[in-house]
Image 1 (cartoon, rainbow, N blue to C red):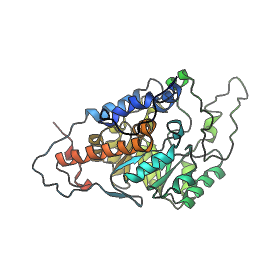
Image 2: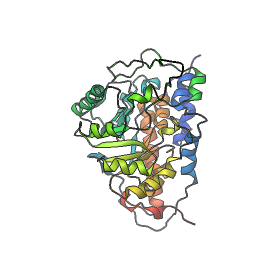
Image 3: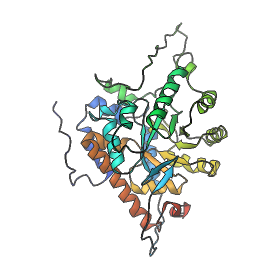
Image 4: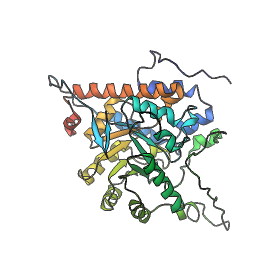
Amino acid sequence: MSRPPLLTRIPDAIAAVPDYATYARERLDPAIWAYLDGAAGDELSARWNREAWERLRLHGRVLADVAGGDTALTLFGSRLEHPVLLAPVAYQRLAHPDGELAAARAAAALGAGFVLSTLASVELEAVAALPDAPPLWFQLYCQPERAASVELVQRAEAAGYSALVVTVDAPLAGIRNRERRAGFRLPPGVSAANLRHGQTPFAPGSAQASLVFDGIMRTAPTWRELDWLLDQTRLPVILKGIVSPEDAALAIERGVAGLIVSNHGGRVLDTLPATAEALPVIAERVAGRVPILVDGGIRRGTDVLKALALGASAVLIGRPYLHGLAAAGALGVAHVLKMLREEFEVAMALTGCARLADIGPGVLWRP
């Protein structure tokens, strides 16, 4: 089946971030679309993520003097032009031949931070070697062998990544029914380019053995693993995958530099709460001790404003920029970032906020 070519110019019909989904889907194999866009179980958490932002209303203000406003910030030593980062997403060459290289180029052009996945389809050194590379953070999935984790961390440090994002909510893959029904398999030429250590699949010793409890989870990271990891790196460590205020408190006690409120886009455990619901509870518990970021369901600049009003310092997007990547490569990713920033600035201006420091709970409508 022939598919439309990549867009070389952005049509007028793409006026907002959600418009990219249709253009991406028609350019991808159905099984790849099921993998990239799908979520766990009945995909309720993925839907709730979006609906939770939609339910929040803004408190518009008029006649405010916001001339000379600014959206810049510094996070973990990275200077960013706006509080929208590209989240770590695996195997981006599924969406475009240049994969993570194209996404990083777009991030650099738009002044956005880029978080590279352990499961990237391009080596981390190649992304860091791009001319005018964006601010780069490396996302780590702790490996079954500590030596493999240390090697990844050391490579990221040597390549110039400025923060380590440790994902803790996915010690095993979620049960993604849509992906299974589509029969998704990684195609030839796409692999986890940064993993050099082979893993031995779990082989149950008896019919009663549990693949989960007796297999995968035996080598899954615990709080002890986090304590060890904090001693292995000079980079600030940001914990990604927090939806519990209790876990947020435990992480801060151990010395993490920041938190990302995330339910993994609903891709691991279905029926977790929406991140917009978890964020204010966690922000209250954290009480400003470390920066908090959030992802999940961000599709509009108004969502970015709402997230900051609820206590986040910045947001990350995943599926939206993948859709842009699949439709138009680096151009599509850059356009996604451009639209979000423009919408965010408009929302700031119309709620009386000239700078990020002006954004607080009063931005949200409280009947």
